[in-house]
Length: 261
Image (cartoon, rainbow, N blue to C red):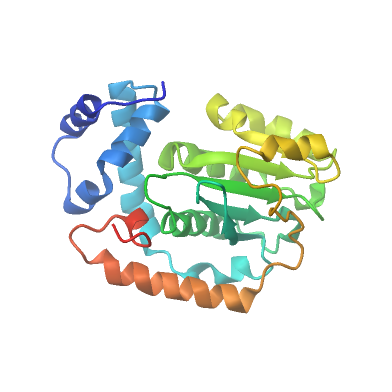
C-alpha cells in the first residue's frame, strides 16, 4: 500500500486518544501517514506501532541527545552526514564500519539515533526519507557489529523510524560480509531488506543501479579522507543550538527546522 488518505490519518489520530503536548507535536499528519504506510493501512497495527514509539521516545529522549554525548563515537568518521544529497535533495548518511572505534553497544546506538535525528533537520520540503551509504572499505569480520546490537539497530530503524529509509547502498561489501548478511536477514523486515542495494565501484553495471538516486556524473564514492572531525563537530554543535532554539516553540517539528516550515 503506497497511499494513505486524510480519512485514514484522522481515524488513526482519533484512535490514539488524548496525547500529551509533546506527543501531539510529534504526531503530525506526515508522521501518522508514515506509520500507516509501514503497516499497509492497518489501523490497529499502526496504532500499536506508534504507541510503542511514543513510549520509546518518552524514555530514550532522542531529541535531547547532543553532540557532546556522542562525539567520541564520531572521532574516526564511522558515521556522518554527507555534504551532498541525492537527486531529490534527501540527506545522505555515510557509514564506514571499517572505522569502528568503540565496543560500546549503547554508544553506537546513541550515535545512530543522533545521526538520524540530525538528518531529519535537513529534509527538503515534501520529502521525509534519507539515504544510507555503507562503505565497507577496510572492514573485516573482526569489526562486525555484534548480533545483539544489529538486532537493536534494526528494531529502532524499522519500528521507531518507519518509512524514513529510502535506500541503503552497501558499497564494496567483501565476500565475508555474506555471512553477516545471512545472520542479519531474519531481523530485517522484507520491505527494509529490499531497500538494500549492493554496489561495487569497479563494476559499471552495478553503479548503474544508482541512476534513480544520484547523478552519477557528479557522484564521488571515494569516501576515504572525506571526514574532518573538527569541522564536523562545529557543524553539529551549530545544529544542536538551532534545535534547542526551536524546541521551545509551540509548533516545533524536528524536520521543519532547516527548511523554515
